[in-house]
Amino acid sequence: MKIYYNCEHCGQVIDMIEVDQVDEVKFGFDCLTAEERQDIIKIDSVANVMYVHSLCDECIESLGLVNVDEKEPETKLLH
Ligand SMILES: [Zn+2]
Image: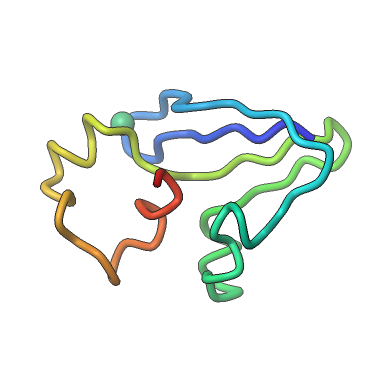
């Protein structure tokens, strides 16, 4: 499965990785609530692609989210 990380603010692709199996713990998805997962993760099972909404470094900086922790779970996916 290919995993695309998209910046939900500016829309650019931050990263793309290909994995045999999605390790939810490794990607930090196990920390998300069901609602957050629906918001952040979109799966195209036909194309075998997972889209993860995140934020790129520029947008994190421009939005002043650098030091925000608990309220922005999607920024954690970058680390
Ligand atoms: Zn961005």
